[in-house]
Length: 136
Ligand SMILES: [Zn+2]
Image (cartoon, rainbow, N blue to C red; front, top):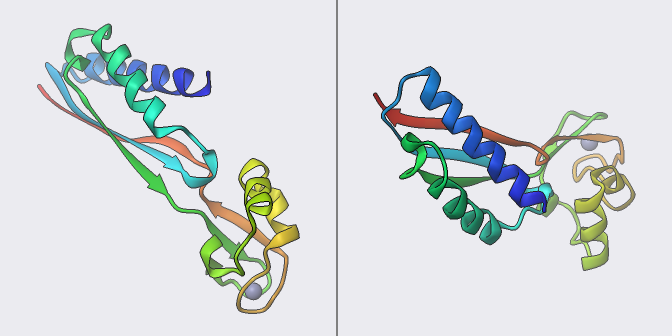
């Protein structure tokens, strides 16, 4: 399961940070998920609760905060940055296609300013731990 591997690596990262920075407790872990990643948030919470119970001592009471990174496109022709919602509404099949393969966005989305289909995905695909906060 996708979510399991993700949460497992987040917990391991927190354990490593706690070890390297000699933290007694890790209070908060901020995980950023790109909108285009289609991660099941509910599963993330459930798995985190399960894995932290078995984690190294400092991580056992950590809180996981999940932030969403919105999708941002940048037009190569005119330089405008725009979001999926700035474009004509996609039907569910088109939306699914874009989420599955962001490159497919070019087929369905055009720059709202100059109508160029030549844009790149700037944000929305990332997954990263933004912050691990703890006490020494
Ligand atoms: Zn443009």
